[in-house]
Length: 176
Picture 1 (tube, rainbow, N blue to C red):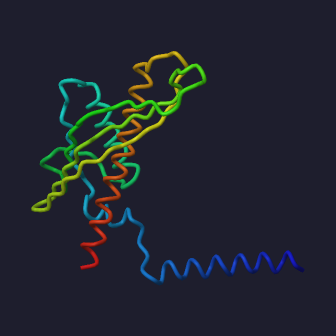
Picture 2: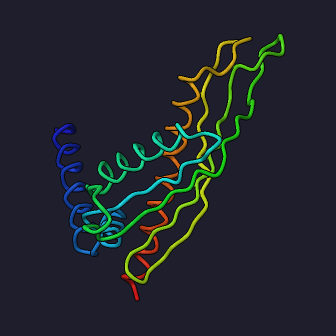
């Protein structure tokens, strides 16, 4: 009998929470971002002459993030609802943890990206730092594979922050 009451209580709680979320007008943040960004997005990454291969990683990460989080598709500039321009400013690898012999065993990659979002007359600029922590074998150097993985993951984190920023802007615009 006690087990039956618990199941009924959980079911009742689930129904009440569902009704509260749907009746109060709750909308997920992706709703506001998608409203601002649109269905089709033109993306452009400014190539850094000091690190040209990073532009490809950042562009792929940007397109992947737009599709997976907002279901927006990358397109040509003339067909786009909006445009996102990304400038790769710098990357810095900072040691976070050392072992007992003094070798670095954990690094943090700090990727600074400059974002510009353009839709019609609306233009938003933001500089965001994406961080990614990763382990490394003691007495080893950062390999190209680890470096690329750190840049890609740090860029995705920066893109997530930018998408969240656009979402907040979209909510504020919707509220007015």
